Each structure stands twice: as structure tokens, then as C-alpha cells.
Image (cartoon, rainbow, N blue to C red; front, side, top):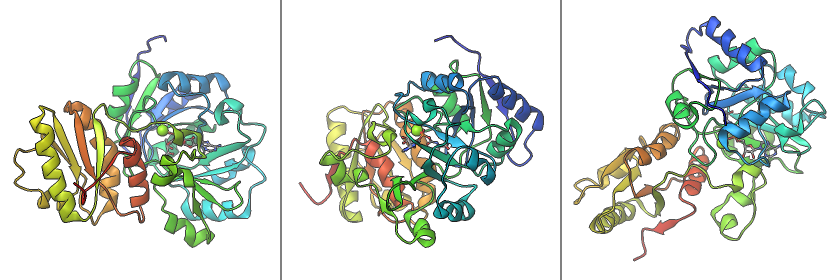
Length: 362
Ligand code: TXA
Ligand code: MG
């Protein structure tokens, strides 16, 4: 692939510099790829109506071509050119959660090229809630296809620095609008299924969706049991390994006091084998594990257990840090699967390749 000199635009989300926005929009209009901040994670954008521009996204990320992209728009009225027929429920959801971390799967219209949807007859659409993303979408006046701006398989980027680490020289530009605040990708909701189905848990919780829709189900392919019995997740992207640092990740599950004891024991065992060991846990769990001897080589604090949005916002950066500190193995605590905990556990399980240690056993 040809080396590009990746342009870097720093934009203050509070007062977006319109000259820089315009410059980034011009690159998109000319068929280039531009990474930009959203409230969830950084996206790697291209003109969704231009198959050649879209192809550049797949090439830069090394993304399998059977994995469709999310189309980002600026206004609810932009949806009708891309999708239809649009069910009544979709309008209620757009009103309740857009701009925001909810992606809707709808029947696709002719205008959307097959390169975007990986040949599916449905299309994924959302309006992101980030002032810089919205300013860019308004300036470009085109639908923008954008997956997360990471190399395929790596944790999604929550800073421009993460984007550059993966994609410098492979993309035309990156717009730096600061740290992504949600930190996990959008919830992907399939409205073409008989019952609305969450294909990827994310920033909008199941409980929030139930308030608007009544019945919502979680794709059975996403659960620990589903994965272990070989049920394939319905979103093509959810079947791939993802979020993995080079270190092996293990989840340690059980009552908090047992998890704390187990973490201490595991650190001791692996350190004795000469390995570089990390742990990833909440402040409360780390307090239980204090005075660890030997200490781990690195600790990632996932915020307070009572503020799951902190764990969500820090998780991908924490997984990337495992590589920065050259760890061989990382032990992470688990989270209750309620609210944002569902999305956090989905990402943690994938990062761990579904390896779980029960704290109350051996
Ligand atoms: O928060 C987000 O959603 C971020 C920001 C940039 O918007 N984007 C993102 O895109 O996470 P990506 O490509 O990393 O993940 C999109 C997911 C994949 O699992 C993909 O398979 C699924 O959505 N998807 C896209 N179109 C689909 C469709 N038509 N049917 C089923 N799943 C679809
Ligand atoms: Mg992704």
C-alpha cells in the first residue's frame, strides 16, 4: 500500500475550527479517508456513496470484506435516502437516542453501494453525538461510512494517538477532538428481525431500549454459552477476534473477596514463572488486593465499581496499555451484566477469547 503523509487537525470540540473542518470535509469529498472523533470511539470515514473511497477503509484497516460498515449522517431526514421502508419503532428510537450511541439496522435502499453493506440487503445507520463529528458531517453533506479507526482486531481507538499508532501513513488525515467520552462502540440494534435484536451491546443499554420498545432481545450468539456452543453472532463483525492485546487476557469471576484472593495468587504464580503480569480492576477491587507480594508489573484502574461509565471509557485504552508495558498476561475482574455492564463484559470476553477463571475453584 502507498505510504501517505497523514494530516493532523487538532479541533477543540467546544469551539470547532471551521477552517479545519472544511479541510477535512474536502478530503472526504475527494474520495479520501479521514479519522474523526465520535462520542463512542474514533471512526475512519469515507464517502458512503463512493465504492472506491469505501474500499480504502477496508484496505487501511485490513478489514475482512464481509464485515459491513455503519453509515453516519447529520440529520434524521438523511435516513430516508438510504433506508426504507422505515418501521414506526425506528422513528421513536431516533427521537429518543439520536444523536447518540445507537446504530439502527434497516432495510437498505439502492443508493447504498454493496461495498458498504458487504452485500447485505440491510444498512446500519447512526447520528453520532460529538460536536466535531456533527460539524464534519454537516460540512461534507454526504453520508459517511465509518468503522472504528483501528487496525482490524485491535481495541477500538478512544484517542487520536491510538488512531495514529494503528493507521499513520495509511490514511489521509486524522481529526483530533480529544478523548471519546463513552469509550465503547454504539449499540447495534436490528429492526429487520421479528423482535428488535441487539447485535452488539454498547452505549445505549438494553434497559433504555426496553423503555421505548417494550420487547428487545440480545442476540444469543453474544453470550458466553452461545460462543462456547458455536452459535454465530448475527452481526458479521462480532464473530471475529477483537480488542486483543498481545498479552493473554483472563477474566477472573466470583464473589469480590474470592476474586481478590485469586488475583493475588495468580500474580504470584505467573511472576514465579518469570512472566510480566498485569491486572485490570476497579478501585474497590484493588483496595481488596492491596499489599500484593510480589506486586504485579502493571495495574490498570477501571475507575469505581459504582460508576460503570468510567470502566467503559477506560477499557480500550487499558487494553492498549497492556502492549505498551509489554505484559505477557493480564487478569481482569468481571462486571455484573446490567446496564453498561453488558457491553463492558461483551468486550472483555472477546479480549479474553472467552477464557474465564472461576475464583471459587482451585
Ligand atoms: O460507535 C460506533 O458504532 C463506531 C463509531 C465510529 O460510530 N463504529 C463502529 O463500527 O464501531 P465498526 O465497523 O467497528 O462496527 C460495526 C458493527 C460490526 O460488528 C458490523 O458487523 C455491524 O456493526 N454491522 C454493520 N452493518 C450491519 C448490517 N447491515 N447488519 C448487521 N450488522 C452490521
Ligand atoms: Mg470495530
